[in-house]
Image (cartoon, rainbow, N blue to C red; front, top):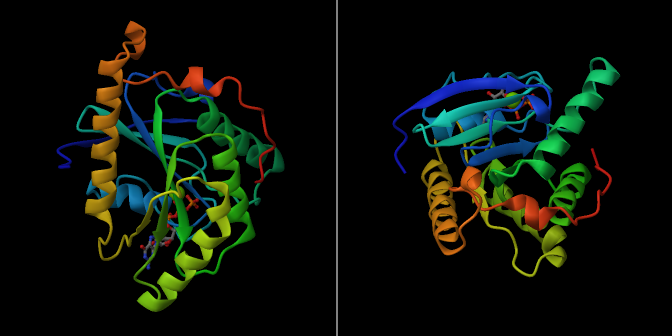
Length: 231
Ligand SMILES: Nc1nc2c(ncn2[C@@H]2O[C@H](COP(=O)(O)OP(=O)(O)OP(=O)(O)O)[C@@H](O)[C@H]2O)c(=O)[nH]1
Ligand SMILES: [Mg+2]
């Protein structure tokens, strides 16, 4: 997929403040500092679009970016970082949880994991939470330039082994680096394929006019239990 335009839309502190649900969305989630904003910039092809920082907990709002005027990338605050006012950090965690569980035009989540680390309990718990809440996701192992390829592969194998038992079909796995550009074509292909599937689905099963381009996820989600967040 070619990116012809990438524009920052707005930032939202909670679900009610998010823009309308007219465009398909693809969101980045993962621990603070894992590289969410950097991967967003990599896909958008613009280094300074989302703000990147070595300080964990930097992205504090839900940030929306419109690509090619037709779909959005969404940069979410990370989990696992509790500095700052406790009340604020609780609010942002709740905003992310609401976004992931209730946003009906959320098509796919990129769940980012640091490829340089052995499986971290917080990440394993978070993937379990995504699975139990039926949030569609793929795994993206980040910062592949930092370790040798054998270590990266060993960490990926250990992580996927930890979560394998929860899935009939294991999630797709990608590796990327915001420094070398590794993974960009693969992740853009995933978005392209998902958009095609959405188009095909909406042609097969017509939905309400306001949801014409996006299958109604509310219907499939409304009976799920409201499970506790692990982060
Ligand atoms: N070597 C290397 N460093 C990276 C890569 N991606 C991100 N970084 C660095 O990791 C740090 C965090 O990157 P961000 O993209 O801000 O991470 P984030 O997940 O958005 O962080 P929060 O917003 O704080 O949750 C920055 O110093 C980046 O330059 C990568 O692929 N390789
Ligand atoms: Mg960020």
